[in-house]
Image (tube, rainbow, N blue to C red; front, side, top):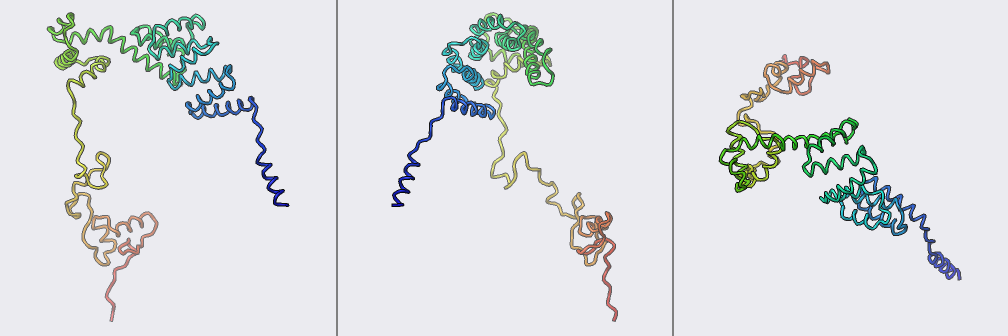
Length: 335
């Protein structure tokens, strides 16, 4: 009877289902997980958590905004545009919309949308200035990019990462502006006359231009601008292939030696130890050599080590023999 009662009680405890959590409690747990995932840099899992939140609360503005920023952070620009298109209340995300269009190389649409953002926020907004400077650099308006980056650099904190990024972009814009104004003309002056005269016909291949410009620069002893050298590097790699030095054979490399990392072998490894320039003494140590054998031998023997230790005050006696002045030479036993 008691066994039947125990089975009934056990079955009853297992049969009870846990009460389902409310929607508010589930949202609270999901937002807690979302914050932890963003802090840990797990953006892919964070996007999935945003989808779970939006299934429970489709009109949650925080979840929409967080997912949009996560898509931009993970460079999923098409998905970001789709999210903005599905959002009924898409007002307020025009800047993010323009940035996604810029990254997808749709400059005309991005410029029109950025003008709308500029009218709302003003021309002094730092985000607008950053994006407009990047678009100016991409479209070849280097003078405008230099002006915008200069204004941003003057108002940026010197110890921030933004200051370093602006400085790098400003330097690139200045190099491009210098090449388009003076460097390009200077590079054309290095070309031979017959080649520069035929540039107007457009029949000269790019490889010939690169080869001629390199020859002219070597003859005149001048160097081309960095931008010109960087643009000519891909073409030069196809015309003049460079062969990397062959690595040594694995069969010729001794065991345990890493080429380029292990120190080179001793050049005197074939010379006797007594004749090496390092002064390593050779030969057997005489019985009872004492301090004279250690000091006069000029080598790193046990007797010399004992003398050095005795000079430092640790003790001049040595159990190995010949350790300092404390060791006595054996004499003949008197009869």
